[in-house]
Length: 213
Ligand code: PCA
Image (cartoon, rainbow, N blue to C red; front, side, top):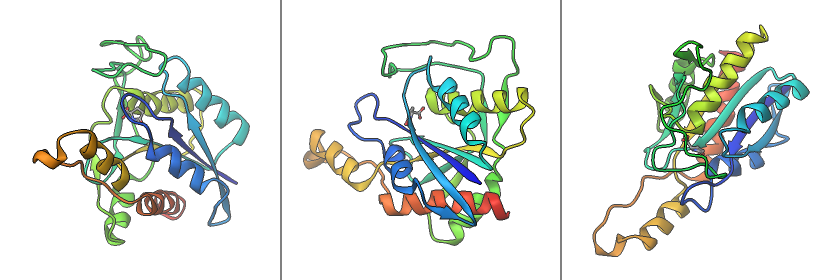
């Protein structure tokens, strides 16, 4: 009775990744008779999907929530869809891979919907005063990659495990650090942020809604 939770290690110019912190914090917690198993995945296009598949094989989870950082988003983004594209934009992965306009699975379908109840999850978060929205793009970096790859894997294995991806914003500490490193004292903007406690609560509620909703 395991709930599989993944976050990502820091990447690009981020020294921290709140998704890794939340995965560590929630590891071992119980929700409705299930235990969260929290893991931190590498930000590497050639490793992430297979590490997720190993986790699914070893844990046989009841539900899967993958998470990552979307610095600049104002709240919790529950992703609706993953697309068949790897494109790192201006941020190489942590092994310096720079895919451009590549297919994750050549010849495979364009996209997969998340199988979490995304609308119910967002309704629940909003009801609890947590700023959240359904997002229609997870980008084309590893957060999109894990959503698409895991859905493709689950379909190939004929597993109906609910799975989705949640983008988390910066923590207040990260936003302050970036404003200190930038031109915050000269009038530049500061990134939106949410406390780690609220981010962790959002992920608890995501699992809870998935199990009960
Ligand atoms: N965020 C990136 C990759 C790793 C992470 O935490 C993304 O949004 O794709």
